[in-house]
Image 1 (spheres, rainbow, N blue to C red):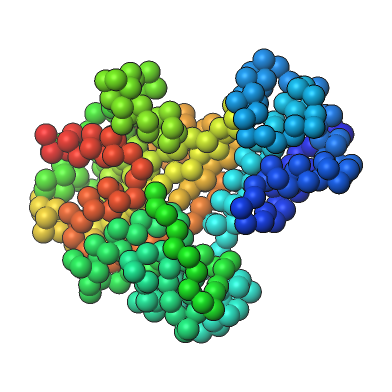
Image 2 (image 1 turned 90 degrees about the horizontal axis):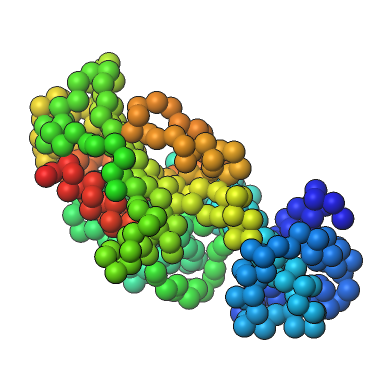
Length: 367
């Protein structure tokens, strides 16, 4: 087996269906037990590239109890293969999540009329669904589905209570549909200084921009700031980039992007970035208070940057006002129209994972 064949095997392994209550490790272990030639070749190949770093990572997984029929070197190789397949699986799942809607997907095959309510093949008109118990479960035409897991459910409730007349479009999972109600799931420092004055009166002039960026401190002591430590080291959040621009016609647009870095645990130079993005625009005039300004639209989206795109995106910054690397793939999650500019805070706190960064941004803009 060579490196290309190894990665082909990882993709194949990561795409195999996993039984309820089991994991990818179970699948891999079963393949080895059955004498699958490619599975056996993969551990022999991976065993050639095991160093102290991989040994330390794999040893922490021994307690789980997988691959106990192998000696220590082969067991370490098995765990490394499993972890790398999990990394590949995460990217495949994200790519699938970002697929454009199609009438051939299970949700729309079961409900052909639902496709009439699709917007730009990414979102569905929220008004056609009944949401069950304020959860992620939706009901339509005597069938059930799920709202996409990246959509902040709290903001849907907030919109219903505070902006019931505003149009809403949401991302729903197109790959599953149920005839009976499914189970409800369980929920789960500054680089570029901002200009705090423009915000109050939207004082960005035509063909100009204001940007700022905030980052989490990798070396923060958890005793000093546990939340920041947790967000950086456990949630892998890196920073929040913000840019606001007014074009020649006076339209003011704004983008906020929170960057989350995911590394291949046994090959940490390999990584991908999942970013959460808010984009909005308004025709509110220069000098108008944001409290009295109406947004034409506000979008939530995820951007996924893989391979070189991930490296480049970490080096670039929206706040500089220049174009950054395009996402490898992306999708919109939610769109609302005709809401107040000040409603942005409800979306930012619901959607972004780092409360530390959102707090810093808010405090900097209004200090």
